[in-house]
Length: 173
Image (cartoon, rainbow, N blue to C red):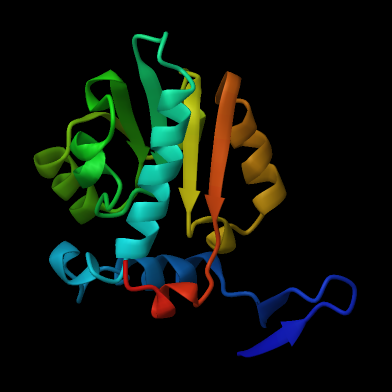
């Protein structure tokens, strides 16, 4: 395997592209040696950024009774476990999309999650905010995925996308 760069857009990717079986094996083991507590400090800056963003969205919608949030690829819920500390947390309806069974178990026991989906095609609700944090880079067909996600955004809703970068290495709060 090697990294190749697109001459038109400068995006880098692995070549050859891993098979579905290879990806499945990789992701089955992804969280195997990690615990949520060991990841908290690593994700601290991401959690702070999300909290500020979500709180700003809530401030702009004081008139609403509920704020529906979908966390796609929630993992161990770095967002979900912090939702109670948000401004107007009682207004937040928190749903997630997650495929990892250990992460689902953790989310169920440690967050005030309403629903957990394993597939976005099963979702019928519309959301005020959909979060894709460090997820898009794992998609084989990101354009198709974004098209599917866009159908789940409410009329005045927002999509929050985070992609990998190394700025978290330099943030202390």
